[in-house]
Length: 169
Ligand code: ATP
Ligand code: MG
Image 1: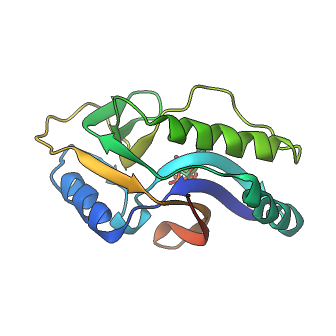
Image 2: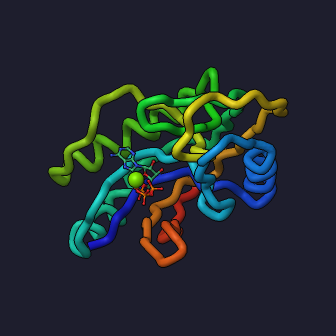
């Protein structure tokens, strides 16, 4: 079994910009996401066996979305999951079309998808207690592709591995 999720994966320049913002944040007890792990989750799959993973890979030929960008312009504190994350005030329609298409495809394989409204975010830190005031330049994330990611537990903490990338139109 692999623990999988679909995500937008940043290019190096975007990753650096986000990591820089993350470095500028301080609050007691915060557990920051390592720069290499920064991402935007699209759909979380959880544990998937080899057979289903192969089916998922094949099904991605049905996903057809145009490239889009997202402007992450706010730091938010999400109380219940105790996260600090970057959020976007508005999304390109293509992002919502993508998330919806992925969920529909996965439902065809019998996977149960949560139907909460999608909220694009970049998790920066966990174990947060409050919002931190920061000065930030908005980050424009140019999404050219989406990725299937494996979440691996290591002695150094979780590590995310890109398994495959699919380019947008
Ligand atoms: P850990 O669980 O070890 O603290 P993590 O939460 O960073 O680490 P995963 O749980 O593997 O790692 O999650 C991978 C990605 O999927 C993260 O972006 C996480 O926020 C998201 N995620 C995890 N569980 C869910 C879920 N039930 N619904 C939606 N997104 C989820
Ligand atoms: Mg988790």
